[in-house]
Image (tube, rainbow over all chains, first blue to last red; front, top):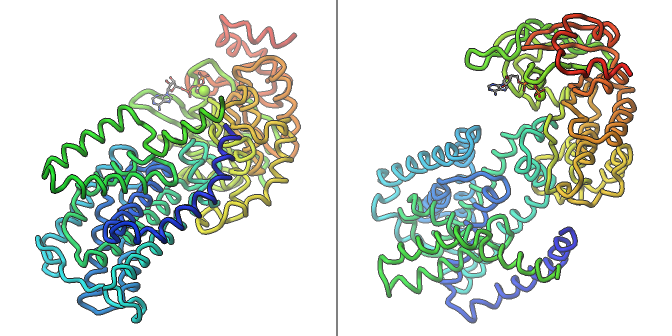
Length: 317
Length: 255
Ligand SMILES: Nc1ncnc2c1ncn2[C@@H]1O[C@H](COP(=O)(O)OP(=O)(O)OP(=O)(O)O)[C@@H](O)[C@H]1O
Ligand SMILES: [Mg+2]
């Protein structure tokens, strides 16, 4: 096992470089808008995976961070006229602050109670967004200009916008990757493995979980804020609990606790949705449900997890 | 500095009306290897849980090193230097043996919350970690995934991880449980070695281990202290012998 893990570790830089190059040339092969959607949801799922896969916390309210950051960014850019990068930063920080509030209230509960508290809190956020005039109620926040990056680069150019999204994704992905492989990540792993033992060694478990929650919420927010710029719209679907469920599906489908799994899962779901939406209409929901059930019953490890297991097995023989 | 590093007064724990620990006044002298013995269900593990704040007491007071720690958080008590092990083996099973010890060492670097720093920064602890592994005879297992080690070795690893904190006081809950004679001998030697600069309070069923290792013994039955003293005193106490009727442990240990 040790040997195989180091085999994965050695393959990692090459894989990352390959994907990075792919990300650079992708907009010349596929629709940039589709790619941007994939990357936004990919980052969202990666942020969620940091929490569930590496801290063992199941949040059922992550839509609140994606959505509220989207609205904050939209309002900053449209109503206050700030530049897009500051809009994204504002959305990210707001989601982080909201994540801190959620975390403080939920972190001392575990399992289903933790999930329920995050769900209840995110429903409150949904309610506020729905009722508040400034957020546009049921219409959402429309007509958000993409603006000029640093006041210079015109983002109405789809290619320019794509590279911004790609850069944001890479930054978010790097932060997550580093957090997992940091001194903090080691303690997080220890807590997940044996929480009482971590406590007995003097670690304040709640504080570590809270920090993981805030990082995860911030990056989910970063994804949401960027997505608002891409679609020039912040909508209620982004704060709805459906979205909180969808990110669970993306993460499990791709592979919980793997580095690339959530990105793969998000890509598959986004692709399926855009392929199927005009063909089968609202049956999409049913198909998603079936995928979820299949995934839980047959492919526990998700796409990337199963692939890794396959490589491991063939490596052993 | 008081003679006693740990003192409890009237320590009591009730579980829904059932009194698991009843009015325990325990005093542990600095530098002692102190045994807490008693039949199954006597409340020994519960006492440990109270001392290390894993359970809040129903009533009573706990003083450690002159400080009232009765209402402290468990991690804070651990940071003070009152560190426990568990009755069931407590390692981080999917981490390597070396990584397990490093988790213990890591806290003193003060970078445990640094999520932006590479974990390579922890490599500076490797030398120290190896020294600890060497002390418990686990050097050749350094890169082994912990779950794959035999039971006795895991218990040794636990002690190494606890030692990484260099705590003034260690609580060991049945460190030799489930071990063969050879492993027991090794752990006894280890405990003797590490007891040099610290106080140890240990729960132990194996009375020959108690006889050879511990300079003071407290006997607990049904949550209360039945007797306290040296092994010679306690083993002659008729009340203790009565509590141990049916088990020949007490006699066996003499020979
Ligand atoms: N969390 C709990 N809730 C209810 N009862 C408990 C709890 N923990 C322990 N008890 C009860 O308290 C009593 C003392 O248990 P404890 O584990 O402290 O005994 P022990 O002396 O460590 O026994 P052993 O030698 O078997 O390890 C037992 O009757 C046990 O069932
Ligand atoms: Mg016990």
